[in-house]
Image 1 (spheres, protein in one colour):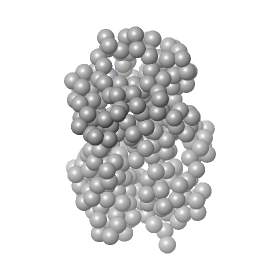
Image 2 (tube, helix red, strand yellow; image 1 turned 45 degrees about the horizontal axis):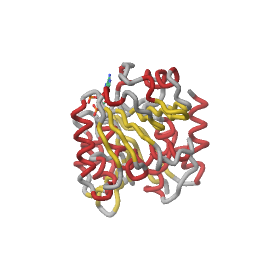
Image 3 (spheres, rainbow, N blue to C red; image 1 turned 90 degrees about the vertical axis):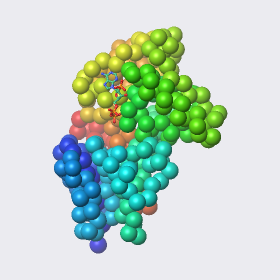
Image 4 (cartoon, helix red, strand yellow; image 1 turned 135 degrees about the vertical axis):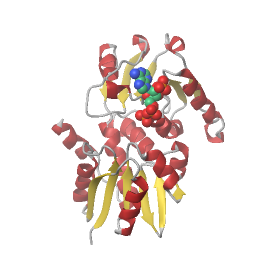
Length: 275
Ligand code: ATR
């Protein structure tokens, strides 16, 4: 019998998730369906309830509903609690379990696709909004030195402070830097978690920020952002969009739902070939 899943968002037409999960299902022989559902902005909860009644086994949640899903879930994973956002719901035993696979997706892509272990790297996280919060703890789990930089500095400061309350990160160096403090510093991995790419605006960064061999990673996908162009022009050795992260977070969700880990590299390659 086919198990049904979906992704809920607004807008949703552009979503690659149905294609990704269809490729995972084919590859692993899992009998599932996966569709994209546009929920009205005030209709997220009603949409989830409808899916549950119809016997769906779970769903993904994307913009702008990740925070609402966090509050709506009846149980939360530690990853969801840390991120204060939910991108995966599992309908099981009458419960709605909320998890978040975004951070795991980012870390896996950097580690597996680019072969960067992250543990002894200088990492710069640019941005302090929802997307940055979502990946902060998964990054800190594998990094020993992280700097957070945000256009509005007070948000980066409060993010860095929040980390210090966690015993498990007591050996990790986390600092918020303002633009002036970034000058003269170099980083091995620079992650753009801002939404600046949506408006094609420049993020002010010192051009000397990229260490030899640096990876510049934009969590957005589907277009060359100004951050990516800036990184190419200023010596980043590798520049990537977030397509791999998208596929890796989907694989992590697929594993939660189906207990099987799909191969991600052929799926990333297939999507890249369409770009
Ligand atoms: P998201 O969920 O995509 O993270 P968000 O919570 O609204 O969206 O956060 C947007 C992030 O992108 C913030 O860090 C924001 O910086 P501010 O806190 O200063 O607003 C950042 N951002 C958006 N546009 C930007 C731009 N043109 N330059 C630099 N940072 C930008």
